Image (cartoon, rainbow, N blue to C red; front, side, top):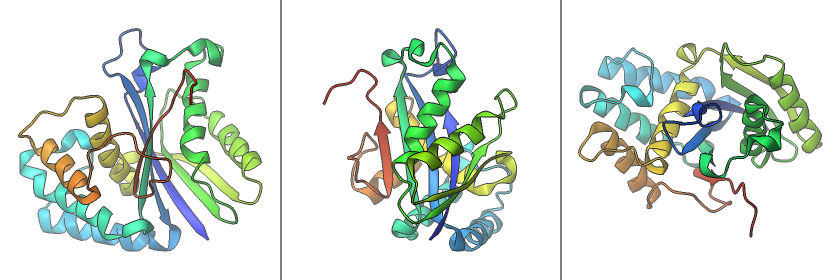
Length: 232
């Protein structure tokens, strides 16, 4: 079966700053069978038309005047059941030791990307992976990531990993929305009685629990809080 994965990130300064704004670096990924791509995009376009919401979909743009639009995006995500899944990894800056990555923060970043993706690449499937383009990143890293994923998943096929501008790719934007919601809980930046709090509550009501680290087998909305200091 063919799948597509749309990825985004939040708080990358956790790897580059001595005083990052947040505790957790977050990298998120939206997973779907490729035959659903056009249908999902058409349904998002229909929501845009109904709400007159034509700007880029972003967690940072959730506001009272766009609250209903973002709530319906959340409902759309859950309407697809397990055919549309989200997984993110949370990297705790208090446990981070860049010496493990030869003090190369970008190498560390892509090793976390590997951990995000590897565990959901299943046998006998093929995957196309799309990441938000970053002008300050080494473009040679993505082919290396694809190679590593391919070597670790010999019965699957990683067709390509490609960087694209998120403002042109609505499914990267949807990944940004879901990632922002998860990040707001883990990084404790969510303020009560706001449009963002209402969106998070909608997600949590659909899941039946608060956004927090999930068991490994959680398939709809998986939050992987990686342990960087070992242990059980």
